[in-house]
Length: 235
Image (cartoon, rainbow, N blue to C red; front, side, top):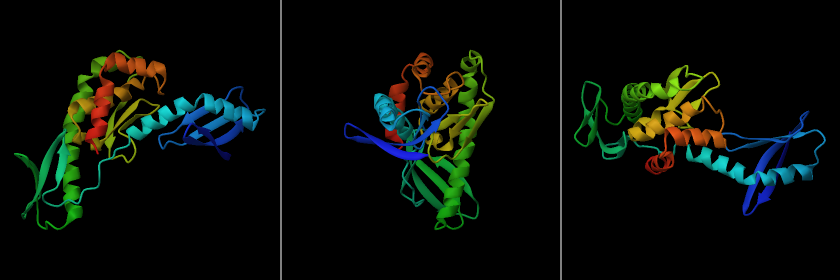
């Protein structure tokens, strides 16, 4: 494998290059924004670069897509007075000294009761457990409400799972499993639904081709506005 780059306007595109027994040049853009190029054995370096430049606009679009799906929520200190999101609304965190452990919404506050208010790790654990419980409810409601959509696809989802993810809002694996980032429980429900439908559309097109976006547009016409709202809110 060889590392190389091309200059496209003011942007430098770095890529890994491998030669294989194939007839055409193949380009993959991965979620970490890395670019992998597979070239025919008889290709010259100049030929490869020329073909990559032709696809440069597409490469940058794919990189921008993956970047925009990286959760950007800043680190929290887990102290009273800071704000935490839940379903698109900001709540002020209030830590309460108590012999019992509990998390609840009270007015505009997110109240966490525990023995040691200075135990930030414990506060974080309690909040994550509370968010997980809320995700169990809301994610599954949205999944069930979109059964008519999935029933229209030849390939059916094998189930819905969710976990805390570092780089993606969601994913659809090759077996049809839909995965959502638990961080989404902090976003408005329509943003959660957008990510869910985005991943469901990957049951039909497991890429970000023109056909994929046409399908997404059909089933979620205002996806661009919703995606923009998600990106701007979760920062």
